[in-house]
Image (tube, rainbow, N blue to C red; front, side, top):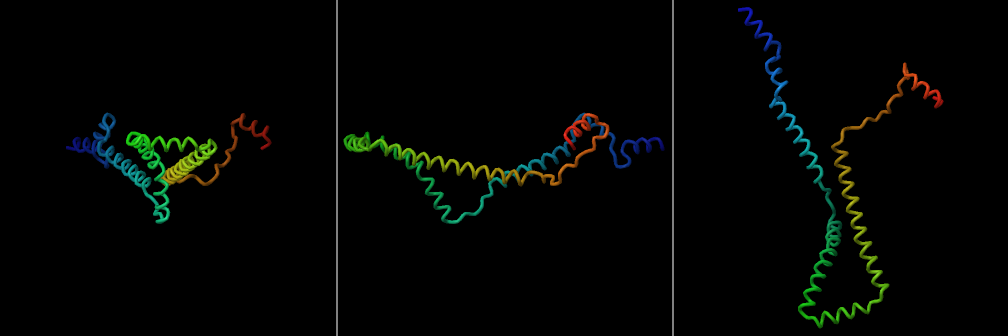
Amino acid sequence: MGLIERAMGLLFGSGRNVVAETAEVFRVNAEACDAREAGLRGKALAQFGAEFVKARRSRFDRVMDGLNRLPRPALALGTLGLFVSAMWDPEWFGARMQGLALVPEPMWWLLTAIVGFYFGARHQTKGQEFRREIAAVVAAAAPVARTEAPTERDAGDNAALAEWRAAAGR
């Protein structure tokens, strides 16, 4: 009777389960694996949620953002409208194109510069806003960095380090 108690005590005693520990060598503990995955999913969801948090903007900012979104669709729809008008009333379209042919070349360069700078500035602004948002999310998700400077170690038995320090005047 004492032999069986000792064997069971060896296998399952003192809060340890030798059978389970041995099985975990060959197969992953499903419960611990699920707990780790749940923690990772929770952290990922928190990070994704932080990416989509937007600051409240004033009415003026929203109106200006809406106005800034108009030129691209207006240019695209206007170009399609030109094709439709060319097919609908070719004489009217021809008269308009003759008027455009009379515009001097420097004005075309000016128009090109204005449109190019508008879209270039808009592209740069949106890119910078995106980078700021990404930096804020990364800063929120990153672990706290060490603030203290690393201490300089003693050269000890390292002859090469001691020689280098002596040559550098330290």
